[in-house]
Image (cartoon, rainbow, N blue to C red; front, side):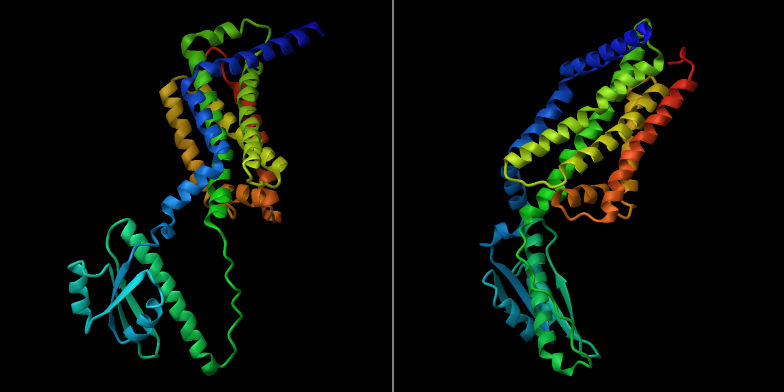
Length: 356
């Protein structure tokens, strides 16, 4: 009984020592402060970032579009309704392209009617950043409006009535950015940092020889690994919960908070276990961090092959549009974390303590 209590006390002391050592890691502290800044001022950052990439910020920009070909009149009628577009017609495509090369217009649309009566449009835009983005968005919107008008014009000639198209909702880009980029970023970043901490902790203990000193305590190597693993893995869900609370304070409503924290806990356990396994296999810090980073990149790549990407799972949980697949993947990540922990414990039990 006394041995068990002494072992538990030693494991708790190791865990406290592990968490206390994080305060001296300037990189980790800086990463936490960055995440805190993002979560605390999320509304301000969302407005700034979305406005930076939203083409609507260039509404005062006048886009010059040159038209040539058989469908110039129809395209011109549509683009002419846009106050931000100045339409110029040219007799042929060669003349329009010359004007484009001379920067008289920002884009050129050459249209030709095919044999079956459809209208084929070829667009040329500049190879730049802001002008290209504005041109593509304006032309795309114009072509969508032209397609809508043509469908209405020829609907009486169809053999069957067309399907009803739902009215486009006026969704805000800030809403999509918050739930598809910001929330997943705040959930996944603590997980990756926790894994990196685990790798650094064990490799430094091994290189400095302090791992041998820890073994003097009445605990086994498995207990030492458990203390470090659980102490590090617990950081991510705590941070995730804190970020979700801060998002709520800033007016960003997040649903299924408990499921999100549970998902982060499972991923954190899996990633930290992966980092611990690498650190046990390779005591060199640089090599271990390289292998850890490569493995995380590979896992993220494989995540894109899943029926539902982990970021989509987080976004759907945060929005509240969950499905059976979403819940199944959330549970799967928890099981993945438990399985990774079991594998690491088996690895510790089979490895030669002297090698560690």
